[in-house]
Image (tube, rainbow, N blue to C red; front, side, top):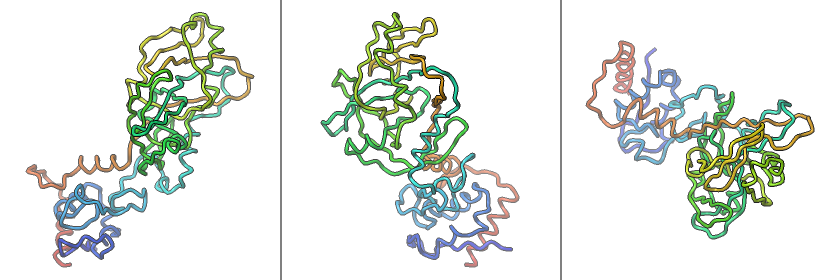
Amino acid sequence: MPLVFLLPKRRQSLNPLAPSHVLDLCKDFAKKPHRDKLSFLKTKGICFGCLSIGHISKEWKKRLSCVVCKQAHPSTLHIEIKGRATKEAEKPSGVIGSASAELCGHIGAGDQECALSIVPVKVKAAKGSKALQVYALLDPGSSATFCSEELMTHLNLKGRKTHILLRTMNQEKSVPTHVVSGIEVSALDSDNFLPLPDTFAQKEMPVTSNNIPRQEDLAQWAYLSKVKIPSICSKVELLIGTNAPNLIEPWEVVNSQSGGPYAARTLLGWVVNGPLRNGTGSAKSVTVNRISVARLEELLISQYNQDFSEVASEEKTEMSIEDKRFLEMANKAVLND
């Protein structure tokens, strides 16, 4: 059966609701390999963003919306991410909270409470003067920086809605979030505020108050006598990852002794890692943070740019017989339209 692709006959046809965009609904076109689709669009000068003729996608803001992931690209060009259910992105915003909760596995292991690299800091909006005191987790296992939605609200900041691909232990899922810019952080005893990279807002951070070290916990460890940890009335509202290396790098390290914790001094203050106090022997939540983040729209754009450019190229590539047959059929369909 011949393939029939309805394309705009006039270059100025830009309305995404026009009949020219039946191409986005064509089942035969959707079944084709991704590279074949992009090759056809490139050959015909069709915008990757709205499937119209007369412009290229990077210059055009009125993109089609994907029915699968809700991102700004045609549904027929959707790229399924391995390990992610096709309807994952359609879950309500509450998935953010559940995603963070799943970073902690309740496996009933151990009878000690362990401190993580949590430090009290001051945060403020870059264009604001109001500073808040919160706890921050310095996490070398995260490729991104996060803040709580509550902190975003208190700083009167509004983020841009997007989706991120959140990879954790044995999990990979798309979650809705806000990208927040303009957050600054400083040590508790300093007014030298430094900018955070773009920060993703989540309902809560994947740690508990039991992971926050207290000064009295260090009393039993004489070798930690030089380590001072201020206490504030707050919870963990920030997770600073490796995309802010200057904030999490250790300046000085006090090594562990006799199975006790170790401490590291950073730009933001002292942090302590390791077992602190005996628990009750009941089930504990074990925090395993290995967070890798990628913005879905950037993954898609990168894939498009890697496969094909919409701008004419001097490069000549040999096409397979199947590729040639597909393009020949598509060309005939366009001419007969």
